[in-house]
Length: 470
Image (cartoon, rainbow, N blue to C red; front, side, top):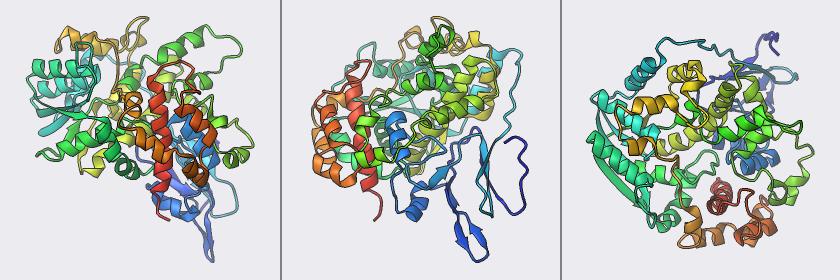
């Protein structure tokens, strides 16, 4: 593949390694009198018309295992997507498509990395006037600190969930403490299960591709509130986990260094999504399952991301895979889409290319130690944030879906996951869905919050396909 010579009259499509902008094309060109017409676009629903929005068995399976469909596959049969850091040649003949990785240079070392990182974080957090999403975590708190250091006029927004405690261990408490410490104008919105029920269909129908993470709802409602103000730019702390490594990396690091012969890193990484990687054969509909002749390609996007890493260090390779899959194909699409609905511009320092490059060059001791994550970020934070914010346990924006589906969100599962609808859509197995709704098929880690997240994901799949034009 590296020695491939481009023949004349071919179409080249590519996607940069740090690009969140997708590139879709038909798997087969449209043959015309003068040659081959390849359909290429950045809009999945647009190109889906050419294949009558026919669901891909592999795409539905991947959605169940990842919560999104990683490139090169899509949710539609006959439509492909270019992975980040790849290019492909679309021939004007009957020859097959040729894939080739883009060269991504790696910075070997950086002098005074602490100072360099802080300077770049400040530079990318500077703007004339902006809103700021303050989640309560360290990443958004450090973006807020950098914005204040650059004298950016900032109004902070935080989403809290009705009925969830706001004690000293909560995200809301940490967000309030950060805003008070940095003297930020601060506003909270409260989201309930009834809000989720009211907005669900509208939010999911607005997605260009199905994304199973319930955090898209608070993003949508936060941006809706920000759109009422004079701000048009929004600062976020998204991407910190991809730069430094999240808590979910630790089990993989342990298994990599103390593994047995049966361990496969691709499957270990797939398990970190906590979706249906074990249960999908029971969950996917029988007509779609019968079309899956070979399941060996399930982890192929993960394997390709490992192979494309510019670093030989396993810790950096794992961060690279996180960046390519969870970052560019999941985290950024979900927040970008919600911001676009409300005509807002996002400024996300941790996803800026030069900060990504710098993070790869930092020594591992400044990213994750045996007991600490985000080491450098915490060292810098000591100058700007209260200890209670720096040392608190990582939580993330945990949408209380399990609580919601026991209360105001019950009609949602009743509507989208009833047997008659499932038989009509032919996406999911009604018997398995019923078992999940009744808690008869739980997750391997036994966490109760996963039950609601799973139901949300299944509702997303059904709702998104139902929203497509017919």
